[in-house]
Picture 1 (cartoon, one colour):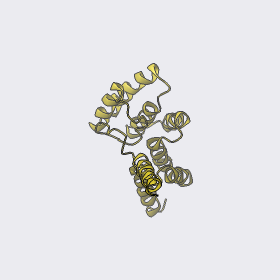
Picture 2 (cartoon, rainbow, N blue to C red; picture 1 turned 60 degrees about the horizontal axis):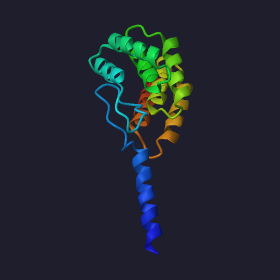
Picture 3 (cartoon, helix red, strand yellow; picture 1 turned 90 degrees about the horizontal axis):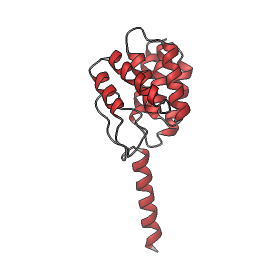
Picture 4 (cartoon, rainbow, N blue to C red; picture 1 turned 90 degrees about the vertical axis):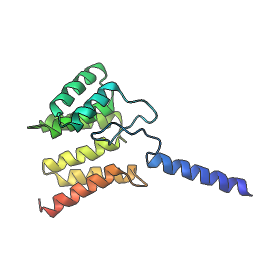
Length: 164
């Protein structure tokens, strides 16, 4: 009977598309990882913050995201980008960075961007084992592969190659 094989094929194609993020919207320039709200239009604060980050204005992005957090502290994407813009800015407060990445992951444990970025943050403070924990988590989340896994894997390899 051909119907079950056709159905199985459709289910597999749907699963592959979902796993590879084919149904997630492309965000504005800037860090694109972690768009966790599939099918929703992007929050104006996130759009503005991404534009500021793309322009290298981390302080401006932080200000925008701080306001967005005050209005909606339950948004994993906002916590993720706030931590990212803090980490990339001058003299990053790593305690603040880790607090916001962890909050993003508390809200959405499968947030690929937060998993990637917290791994990179752990490399910044010299904690390779923790970075590898998040790489392993991304390996589970990205069954068919994803940019976040690839980026963190390269960062871990580069860190190891430097002998730190």
